[in-house]
Length: 640
Image 1: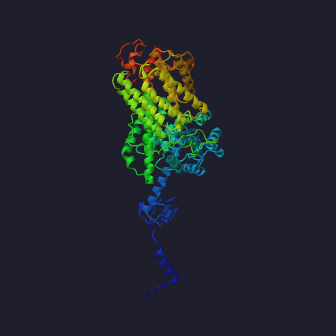
Image 2: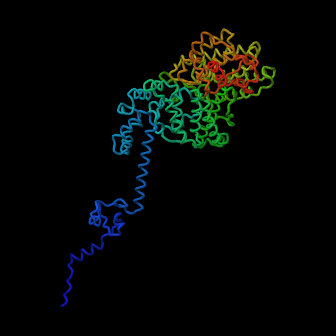
Image 3: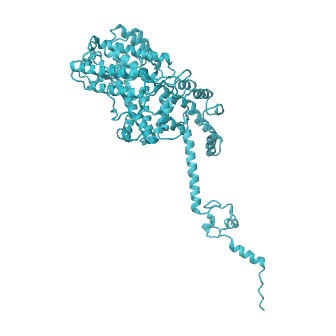
């Protein structure tokens, strides 16, 4: 008999309906996929693997994943963040000073997760903020004090981050301030202060870069009292560290044709001039010229409109860059005894006209008065320098291609015109541009530049030649030397050489090399000795000074001149080091020939009267000798 079918209860029907609505498991574990069995997706162990007595399951996606694609995307993003974090951590270890890198390493050894260490560094900001007593693990106590004192004494306060990892806000503010106090607007006139400081404080902008900031700090550290204190306390060469950081940053900025990149490159060249390695540093000089050419200021600047704020800003910055580097090149040309390698801009400078009654200011732009930060600054002096740079370039070009034989009628006539033009330009300056009426570093440098041009006009002539009636060349040169010595002594009296600009060395350069040919005059020996005293003071800061002084000794040997007895103590030890020069001199500059060039006193000093000797470092059309060649010949005597 057939059994009647049982009627399902309401509870059983509901259970079946619920079972049908359960979602299917999207992701089977890897073991179930291999065996092609159904997987319930249980974690950490699915039912099928449990029945097979497996210990755990492995799934191709994370729990809760919506799809395989989204899971892979999230995993990729996570790995990318980890990779970026680890690279950031590696950058800290590679780029930070030794004491900071050691602290990071110690933290890594104590941590289980390196990214946790990285986050602690970010959160605590121990490596990025101005050093304080709380971050003793990162900075030595002495360095903290120097940083804090530097910040307190800086008239311009700027952040060190995100620009540099070498120092904190205190030292960076001090070094940036000192650039605009001592080097601007004469030796470093190519940086527009207002837009640079604005962008540096914002942390971004077209007129500031990490490369430029580190280059500035490397340059100013050469002549900074705070950098000397750091060196004494921690044995750290701040200039070298900033320079290394600048070169690393340049690797990033090398292809960027920007104003800050040109400025940074040219600063690296100026650093090489100060540390006696300008032959190698010339690569930065030519790179700056090449990038400046790509910016094409001769065409771009005239097209920029002054009634559009952004264009007016760019016009001022690009014009100052172009004219400023031309000014510095015109100054450097006196060391090479050749015209500037950079042609004069073909458009007028964009700086505003100056007014006779504009008062001196301090570095912040506030009228100078009691309690103002030193030194006083003369506004509107930049265009005066540009005008002199044009005249200097014209004189240097003429010296390369004179009208007729040197010292003959046409040549004397042309040099008289140059001398008269120089006097007229000086008379056109406002009284506040006079170093006698308004002694400031800028007015002293201005007079030094005027004298450099005068040296270039008259120094190639015989001492007895007369530029003006009863005014022989020798008298002019000795008077110029006396004024230049007075300029430097005034500078050192008013502002002790705790902070200074290398510009004043140009005066000492002109004096010593000019007087070398006039030791027969008793006035020359005294002036020469006073110049050597001042050179000795900065010799410890600027390695180039030692090479210059060795060049003076080599030139004296070559021309059979004897260094005055009272000046000889300041050359102590330099002759003993000349053996090292036989391996090559990394410094390039020219020593002016004695009056009359090769015909007067150049040959025969080393027993070689061959006029065709190319080893004397003489170049056709240049009134000077290559110091590198001369020093190598001089050093050969020590080997013999």
